[in-house]
Length: 120
Image 1 (spheres, rainbow, N blue to C red):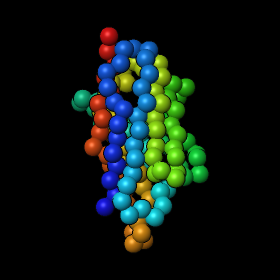
Image 2: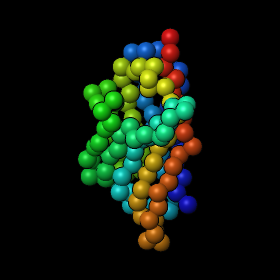
Image 3: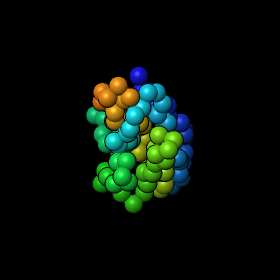
């Protein structure tokens, strides 16, 4: 089993900032990529940002220039720095990781989600 534990969500005013963290643990041999998704009420889950083990990043158009994804490969941890937050960013944010376990089987795991609310 590979577990992902997220932290850092909360309530913030429009224009404010938050930093999400997600740490992966378990019998991990290697991680190919980690990412953040979000799901707002009544909407489908969507990709926010992703990063490969080599550092290649990908962002949803709606967050480009405002959000920054980064990772610490030694700690199997991914971060999402969110600046200039808007009410439209309100959602449950989920961490995702894909990679290889020590038994040479692939894994694709999700965190439990953390609520981000942007409101005045």
